[in-house]
Every structure is written in C-alpha cells, then in structure tokens.
Length: 292
Image: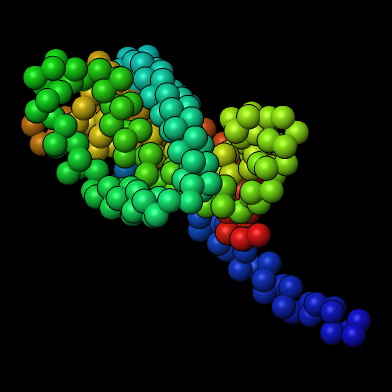
C-alpha cells in the first residue's frame, strides 16, 4: 500500500517539467513586453536583427544607456495616461460595488424564492448576458446623444452594470443555493429579521463567493473596450481605449512605445490582484461548484 502511494520519480520529473514549460510559455509574452518597454522602437521592433531588442543597440545610441524610461514618461506624463488610470479606477470601483450590491440582494431573493417565475427571470438574464456588447451599446447611443449624457463616466458605468448584472445574478444565485435554508430560519427564530439574517449570517458564510464574483466583475470593467470606447469622450477615456489611441491610425502616426509601456502598466495590477486573491478565487469557485 505504501509503495503504491509513493510517486514515481520519473512521473514527478515529467510533471514538474510540464508545469515549468507552461509557466515559461504563459509568462513569456508579458516578460518580453516588460523588457521591451525599456527600449526604443528601433530595438524592440527591429526587422534587421531581433537580438537588438535584447542588447539595446539603438537604445544605447539614442539615450546613452541600455535601458530607457522614455516610453513610460511619454505615456504617463506627455500623453497623461494617469487620467485614463484614474478614470478606470472610478469605473471599476463603481461597477463592482453596484453589481455586488444588486447581485447579492437579487441572488439571495431568487435563491430563497419558491415561485416559478424565478427560473424565467434567470433565463431572461442569461439571454441578455449572451448578447454581444456592441449590439447593446449601439441601442443606447441615440438616447444618450439626445439626453446629452454621452461621453461621461456615469453613462459607461450604468451600461457596464447592466451588462454585468445577469452574470452576477447567476453566479451569486448558485452560491446562495449551496447555503442551507436552515441558517436563515435559525437566525430568524433567534429574533433576526430576514435582512438581518442575510447580512449577519448568510453573507459571512458565502464571502469567498462574493470575492470571486467581485473579481470577475472587476475584470469585465477593467478590460472592457467596446463600451468604453463608444460611450466615453477623449477626455474621459479609460486605459484600454487610451492604449489603442497610442497606436495611431492610417491617417495619423502613433507612438508604439507609449502603447507598450501603457500595456505593462495596465497588466501589472492584474497579476498582483490575482496573486493576492488566488485563495479566495479557488475557494469561491469550489464552493459554488459543489452542492450541499
């Protein structure tokens, strides 16, 4: 029995090698972009010799050093990327707070409701969530122009909440279903109201699910391009549309290194966030997948 439980050294070696290979392949694009963000465009996008991106030949000639922060300085200071970062923070925090507030209340009500219309409400929400975002945004454009609310952050926040809410309802509804109703009933027997039982008993139990749902809501708002690009003005752009503007167009030349530095700046917080909340994500997904 003990021999059967011992792992084969060969199997362990193969598994470790595959995991390391996967880590290298997955991390290489970001690490290469991070390295290139400290180079000039002639090095990072060199067609003559790709090794220029590694050695920094033209970077040394132009700046006197193998590394330069011109890309970050140009993006954050010259092009005021910090405004886009601030707008992104406002949009993301607002979307997450509103979505979780409405999602926890709605998901709890649907999970504890015994009426048949609960199923149909969830089906309608699923259909709404499955629709392409661009079709929903195009329907909002005309009234937004007529009401003179196009281009403002609250407008984009409302639309992102509307797009995200069906997913939030479905996910939190599944978490609430996994919590026995006996907890609610016991709390109310002890003198709590329905809302007090929800706040003091149910929410603390399903806190990993709330964090998991909040992270998915965060990623939706943080990475969105279609909604923010169509509904926000140039002054109120978030980071993703701002990065696209650095690339220029066929009529106007852009600055690619500004975009490279901005991509690194926008991606780094996501790595930190996922690393910090990885246990809560795994715990939340596991508790939402197991009934009982």
